[in-house]
Image: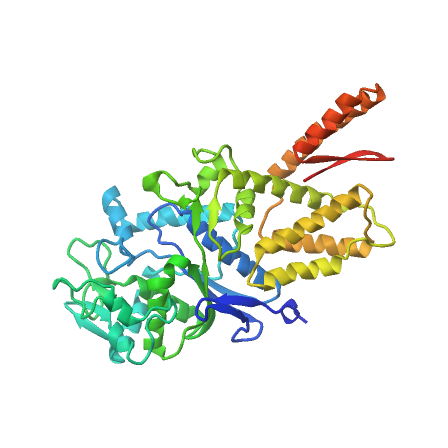
Length: 493
């Protein structure tokens, strides 16, 4: 029996607005698509958080024994700078400004994207397709939508007819909007647009003479609309209907709404069973923005070269910090939060590194099996990593008690604890027991041992004031001394 037969997952489905029991279309198999980056600049930390959430989800599915096909695309064409149907292609604009080929821009920032995700210990997706690699598939979908009477051609461009689609299918089903409200809140067309209605969106855009990126099509030399690539690639690799589609909260409308409409207009079937959206990352209580300086790049976290942080942090500390918030919650990125996470991360690693040296007894004072299921219950509850982490620190407390002799554990329970801590900390949360954390732990241990020796000498000389001062100041720093007949040990809080 696979683990997934024993653990029932509840997923918050944006489509229904509530948690639902997860039942994949094909038992033991999961198809998951996540919208990837538009590679025209260094990857944003907010994007990293979104991809980290789905990396954690991917890891948990794999841990449970599911065979997962995880598709995460690269947008390397068609994404206009204002996320609408006007303006310049983001990649083409960058290429023009730097006087290089668009594919040089794509290559540079795709490499950066992969380098950053590797530092954060992401697992690679099963397939990472690109928009430019699927132009033919996108053209074929457009043909089908035109044949079904839900798109029209004007001056070489093709637009999706939202009003006509809405006559039989609800446009706005994901974002809980209705077309009437959209019409009311949209300015009238200025007479220069080719669209019948402001709500219509581009499936294909005719390229202006100065537009660098263009492909031949039955309608014009041009390029696909941004929304179309995800419909083409998700259905190609996962089928007309698949289990999970994920992305950032900002993509819910219009991007994901348009995906649903395109797929329904092509295949007459709802494409996705569970829509999942990760929430945004803010910084110091405000929106991240380069224009205001309230901004940090991932590499600046690792180097410490940013005015908003006081030191460098390892990728695992930053990952640990982000996973302490639920993926659907807004996360406020602060230096104080990172400092607290670093302290907690080292405490967790210290406990894990001490597992092999724990003494076993005939009885356990800690019910490891109940604790283990609590960790699974948290993950099964819409991937609640903050509760998982709280449970891990419950285990840390018991490990430290076993170390100082105030608690006991059997050999069998210790083996369960070792396997479970490894599974949840490293396999599922994706943290790394980095050398730097071990080195830091070794340095801390050495420094505390010197202070313990000084305290013992002070007690031997009946200098109890100094002895108490060492104990109390270490306690203020989060280091608890534990005196026993066998000597003095310490734990970190």
